[in-house]
Amino acid sequence: MAAILLLLCAASAAARDIAPGHGDRCSSSASCSTGSTCECTCRSRHGSAAASSSSDVSSAGGGSYLEPGDTCSLRRNPGQAFARCRPGSFCSCSCVASGAPKSSFGSSYLPAGVCADGSKCSSRAPFKCGNTQNLKCSFTATTSTTCAALGYAKPSPSQTYCMANFKTTCADPANAGCNRCAIYKVMQACAAQSSPWPTPSQKGEEACRYHSTAGNYVIVKSRTVDSTQTSQHEKDPETGSNICIMPNHYILMPTTACTGVDDSNSKCTGPTVAYWDGAVRHGYGSSAGDLGFGNSHWAVMINAPDERGQHQMHIHVAPLEPAAASNVLFVAKEDNNMETDLTKPPTHHTVNGHTVAAYFFKDAATPPTSLKTLDVFGTAAAIHNKFSKNPGQEAYGVALIPKKGGYVVAATYGFADVNVMDTKPATNPRNKFCQAACQPFK
Image (cartoon, rainbow, N blue to C red; front, side, top):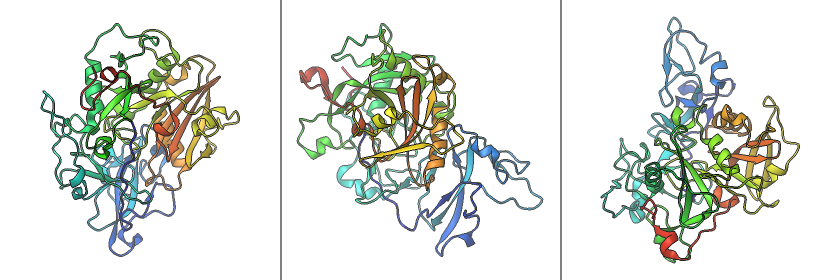
């Protein structure tokens, strides 16, 4: 489920984020304007090996590896060996205003995301689940150890994205009762279930579709805000709402606590995760635990950090809506001349302000077998670094679109699942399909 997030970034903060190999990078305070300094951290490329070819970072010799989020340097002092960013990451530098909040939270890199003043959440503090588990949503103003409000560099109007602590995952007890961790509880409930799983013909209130212990994921029916509600407070994804099951819209969630495309944990976005292959196989299939989309128009998509409404990673699997030229994913699917050579610039399409940059991967099998070994997150990160004019400051999502003869892998910009996928909820009878957001499901 996506929600419009707040995006707030002071103009004096990170002025640029330059990848190694560019001549216009900051590498010392002298490269930045007065009142700002050049700060460098290791940034994950989600499993891509791009960093390993950088002579001034990964091949400088000696030293140990630094992890994403660690402070790094683009310069090596004479006679010293320095620690290098581990393979799959690179040393990324930005001019940052003195005292400005950092965008890197330990192992989780949030593209252009900065901690904002938590006082802006005072009138809409995150909803605390009132259930028998007594889950907490320990919202307080942003401190040196917490991040209750998060901002991204996006055009006005600015909004505030609130939770208890964005520096941690939904596994943190402080976040467990926040509405933005509601699907984390759904994941846990589904993972606790056992087979037999429902078949595609079993619609209704059957929510949990599959639990893969080998692939470390669950697939459940997604839910959305109850459209019959009239209160703005009820509709706010952070302060709590009644939500209803979407009969044709599913989400795949890791059974690991992950945030999203921005999470550098290898169990979340590493090159060997089984999430994309699992989503496509179940999407095509019609057996128990499958979704039954077959050769119709559908896609698999994870929203960009600044487009998502939940703090637990969730990958959408749903029909394209509309399946027409006004939908950028449909346009990408219908493009039979899409680039296949990864050494060349990706093909890009923009429709109604929604943009994708993508490659087509040939695979004659149905479902495609090459997804078992393709690093989808790493491929999307490479596309983003080739296509975006400011890759360190622009958030992106990932889409995979099955089609005859293969599939499209794309980096996505400026839209979420609600803009391109079927999100119609079932509301009749309400007692079967709609319930409080904090409850896993009936």
